[in-house]
Length: 269
Length: 293
Image (cartoon, rainbow over all chains, first blue to last red; front, side, top):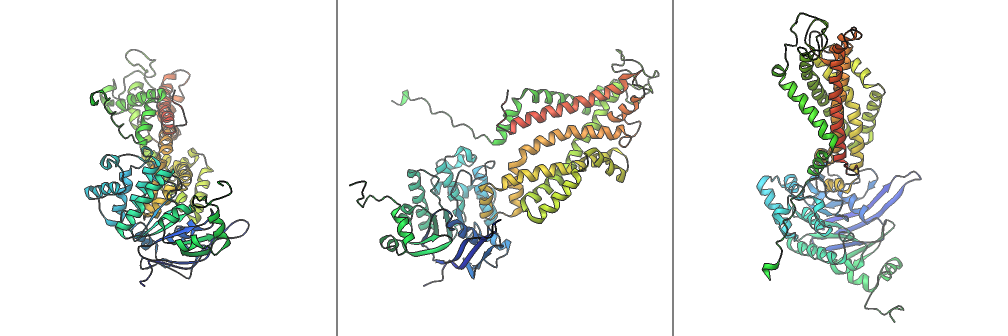
């Protein structure tokens, strides 16, 4: 088997608080291979997002410790700020939970999209504009040419999330991290966004990490899943295996919390 | 039927937050009055040699003439036309207002951005420095700087500018702190932007509203402090026609020839009021919570 794209060993994140430290992530290890979709599930505060923010270097060096973090051929623990900037957005793209607040309200969509090309590919002017238009078309934003001049407030939530996805995949990253990309959207839009994500993943051959607490989303899109609870991974395996035969009581209770139409319950009987 | 269909409404042209603010600004009645007053002063400053009835330094013979048709604002203690001197004085005062604001704005913004964005010891260092400077009233601070640099109108501009640095820095730091916590700043960082780019492009673009309002008000304030320093003899030197200096010179004749001191005083008042009106208008323009009446 080839080397994993992302390999994390024994990651721990400690937040300093007034009443002592809190371990937000404790001894997390996993691998992500090229082309696969890995889901990280767990309740709010289980450490899903913090794990990925630590990998991206957003939490700084203080409080974050690990035996090793390798991503896209780089040692992310030892990478300098300049190296990390080149990796973020270029090799690891990220999509956020709330598209309403993740775009800068005073910059046009076009400016925010072309920025990606400017920073990472050194493109400017007509070349970056064309790239931005192509991207918007790719994620299904209609009349892309004219919408480049629009501001985020002129977009609906679903359209904004498409723009966020366009920004995240602008430089064709090897890894795409989607942090609850559909949580803030309504159900029909959720399905469209998930379609776009898996389509882009196939097209660009990206590996994807889907952070979610929505097991329905996970079942539909992921190959493997990690279940996190209180900062630790309590169970991991192929999605089908975990759904069919959860080993840990926490996973069982997570699965039991989802209404299922294929099972007869007390209520429906 | 196609013919029955109403034509599709033209899509509303994208309106930037900036243009929305300017629209609200221009709808503000006070702001329009302020703009008119400022425009009048700007025209007078630029066209002073054509508008002023006399040479501001020419001695017309009779001193302390009361206002009349020949000398609308009378003549001063040396027999110079007060109106002409007020008109020429607008050049110095307006230049002082704009230039000194620049001296305060640029370092203030850089310090505030750095303090708010980097936090930690950078913030501690800059904030303590700002606090120390804020302990002095700005005119005292300006006096100290003038004492160091020596009197003169250019030094007044520098002094008035620098004395406003802490206020700019404090305003910017506070605004940065509130904007920095927004998800889009985190997002900008996670797509690979450098700190400088995030500070100047992503954060600065979101805090320039309050900054523009404050800067406008500060122009009026700078003119006032500058005139104050000239009044104290530390700024413009005779025979320059500068409003603060003119008020100072007319002060000893206040009982017999009030117009010598009152005319430049009214000029200062009207310019400061103009900037305050514009500032109020801008505030309602940039802050959607303030209703335009």
